[in-house]
Length: 408
Image (cartoon, rainbow, N blue to C red; front, side, top):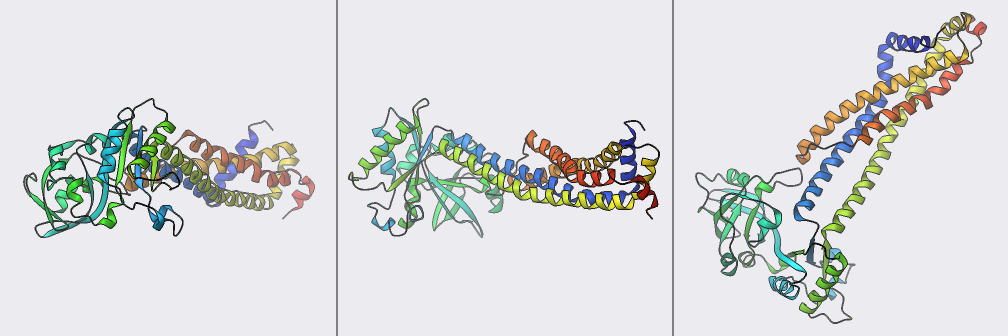
């Protein structure tokens, strides 16, 4: 009996029981498919957030008003100020000319945008002429805001292509009017393609000058104003944060004993925190999916034990004609491992296809699946095959040939 014979016997046994073999590897297929699909979705979601952060730049610090959701119950009512203003923004820029290279105000709101007899719920951002440059977006038609639009509270807007279609705007949209919160605004610009995903469709976005928005936004919503600051590259982040914090406290007239009524958010720290969160989610998801692989391994062992019982006489014949204990052991280990590897390969294929499709639909991203996921997809099933296949294989190899030949 040569060294190839155990392998050939294992393959013949698998082929002779196709249905049982297929059902045996089903748990492995499901587990590996889930691993690859989950990794694909996580990579797709990570691509959205990372792309947004990269577009904003890591040299960005956001200043926001502290809201009641950020503080323990009762503390928000004790804060000195409950509104962030464009005055804060302008003063901050003037006080730190050697630190801050640019500032952009953003106040996001949602509401119905109307054109004639059609209406659509859209995201509206009140900002200034620096927004396009900060977000690295271009216009396909029209113009950007200018400083006069901000200074004169001009009733103008820049809108996305999708919104034009949803509002049924015919012909050239430039110069046409849309209605927001009872105020007619003129379309002066149209975005190029901004992209969309499960989280939001940027092509539904509307930009209106920040000063114009303040005329229609209630005071209760003005606290959500964010001051986006860009600082000089090469400066220490902690130094920038301290400088911004000190100036903001002076602007808002806070005494040394009074707490900050604003918070500082750095894109670099947000990116690091996001990476940690994604790593945690990946670990938890991997652990949950690992349960499916474990169940699949138990199924492999169960079927292999049944196979040993069914093939007791065959094992006796093989031993009678010269098969060694090691040959029988290797044959059954090969059967279990081949089944697991086949399940792993099929699971990788199905997981890659399903994960890519789901990520494209949900996040409009075609994710790059790390090589480690493919290694796990093959390596873990191989280990499962050896681990859960060893006991049935050892049991088969220890059968007494005389007793095995008597088995009916």
